[in-house]
Image 1 (cartoon, rainbow, N blue to C red):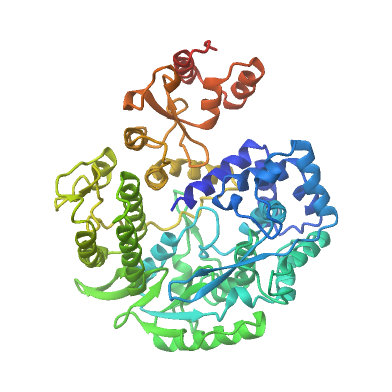
Image 2: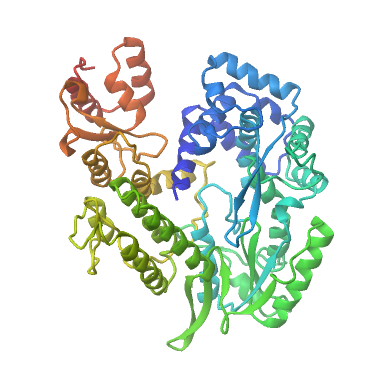
Length: 611
């Protein structure tokens, strides 16, 4: 869940390096179908390279080493000018190093291969991604939700539920592409990039080298985009974008001879008259929802569903050289069976004379959540300190936040609670108590819970069956990282994400921290609603510090009143003594009078002069 906040941090990084205007221009020009032949100038630009470093350095994978044994610290220790020239030189005669192969378990028990590029190659890929993304975002279909800025699985589920409830589409075509990431045709991908307007031959040559990077112990691939590379998600969306628009052209974006579009007073583009007219023709109503290589086509009847199933299978084979898995691909009548999507299962059930979507966790998801919670409980048998209880709470909060959009999710978590409670009692009965010790975080998220509360090491466990359904919201299409109005909507939504910060804090407790400090910093985050205590701007995982007003070296404590959450720049400015450093951050932050007053109060308490 914390990836949402990391994505917002990348947007802030764009603005910090004064490169946002460049990305905005690429987006607007792409909307106008301009061809881009000199992208390498932007990709190797100093600001773009520094932005790539900043976006990577605090990613949790930045300490993961490639085949050359280097992590981000190798580049962190370089002088800035040396680092920039090093990356620019890599681009001039680019030869990627071999990719480290690792395998991670899949939910079905099988292993998923990942390719981990060397850190230098990751920085190169990030530089390319930053420039290509605005171009591609302008061309991607609006109902593609995977690996895209500001979009999530919840948006895909919400769209699916809307098609069932509002459009009354009760047949769904499930297409499972056989080994999609391993079978992408490189030549076809390069042609698709060219068609999108990405026509810098030097860049396409570099991307071709990235695709053909040698995989350690495997060899040089002739097809596929290795999962684990920074560019791979974007490239996979480029491949399937052609499929999106082909399906969309059958109904949603079908060009009629007459323009039936009307504009409402609020600016909404109304195409309802177009679709009403189309329903009187022989055209078949179909709607697409895609998340990465997992997609569904919603239809009104079985005949239409069967035709689009056959047509899509043939199209994938002929146009993209991709085959489908026959045993996993099917047509589902939602009135009689569930369809599974992204860990949920959806079905249309009768209610008050009409069919409405009812959703639950899939069986695989239930088993996975139960297993993970049990594993943590078993581990706590030998290590039941508060840190491990907080980790269990973070896991519970995380799965609640993800699955809360299901209409009947309480039934699923009642079952999970029953199964895990048995393990909890059997493994931890000697240290568990029924006496509540509820923190501010507990009261915030589960204050209305009336059931039994279990406590270990003076930390109450979040109730597994204490989940409340929260209906998902459709994606607001105006949200965009590359327009002024779109970014304003992104920043507005930041204030709603502080529960993700709380979960992060629960899951990341350092051994050297006192129990008082660990609890107070979470309570304080809730009290500040995830905002900086000086500027009032939203905090994020990559940019926040819990500051001791009176330093511990001067007798300060971990008491709640002695703590305040601030962003990193405010924290540095609080402790800064050199005039050059102070001026640097004052210029960067542009504090108003009220914020400056709060800052000076913090500076005085640490023993520094006011500004």
